[in-house]
Amino acid sequence: MSLSLRRHGPWAVVVGAAQGIGAEFCRQLAAYGINLVMVALEDAELRSLARDLEREHGVATRTVPGDITEPVVLARLDETTAALEVGLLVYNAGLAVLAEWLATPVERHLAMIEVNVRGPLRLIGRFAPAMAARGRGGVILLSSMSGLQGTPLLATYAATKAFTLNLAESLWAEWRPRGVDVTAVVAGSTDTPGYRASAPRTTRAPMPVRPVVAAALRALGRRPWVIPGRANKISGVVLALLPRRLVIGFMSRTMHAMYFPSRE
Ligand SMILES: NC(=O)c1ccc[n+]([C@@H]2O[C@H](COP(=O)([O-])OP(=O)(O)OC[C@H]3O[C@@H](n4cnc5c(N)ncnc54)[C@H](OP(=O)(O)O)[C@@H]3O)[C@@H](O)[C@H]2O)c1
Image (cartoon, rainbow, N blue to C red; front, side, top):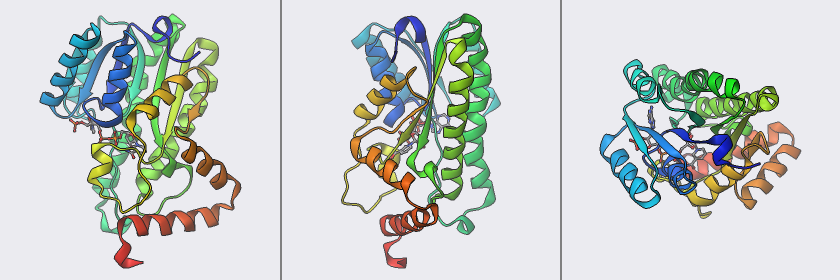
């Protein structure tokens, strides 16, 4: 199957659209001829990308600036999409707090639940019923390799990404007979502004965004989840074969070496 204009068009909603993986989703969807409703925190970057895509690919765009967890932004998104046929939802916005759990106020943990868990559920609830009624559509959710097991220093974030993966698998099976495709992208380190801001110390280069998004769009309608990149795929297989205790210990050492080497 993969991405199809007939099945996943004419409009896509991309949440977290201004930079990184979300912006690349917009570029590849526009190149495919899919019109875009783009949501991100900052207005200026969002508008500038939307203008570029209209000019380069002749698609139509709408922008909805603001925090997707805010009721006023959700209401604006509802208004903007009321008369549009949305065939694809890409929920890409994510909040990651990288720190020891106890060093992070509980409000920040709850904020991750809001953006990474309640956010996608709300938007799936908004757009999937119409897709199911039409008998076609797609949902792409952003999970992470940190969600494949417990990941110290990213505990709550990793748990939200495990939720995302599990949700996508269930909905993939539930909605296949209804013609609605669901895929989770189990991304490894990817070269985005968000990743760079976390300032990891690693010799392994992160993946560029382009093949990550291309893998996601190829997987849509074929698989409930995809791990982009050969090295990440191999890591995924090896980690799944090892005892979980060992894997969590390995993740703990890796995370401390990447982010808090002085405390090792
Ligand atoms: N990069 C990685 O290594 C990696 C690995 C695994 C999984 N992931 C997942 O992939 C997704 C994208 O990551 P990324 O690295 O591309 O992120 P990024 O560079 O930080 O970009 C995030 C985008 O989402 C928008 N955004 C963030 N919070 C939002 C909110 N509450 N409401 C509306 N828009 C919001 C940002 O808007 P502004 O541009 O206006 O700030 C930005 O456009 C996330 O779900 C992340 O967890 C990333």
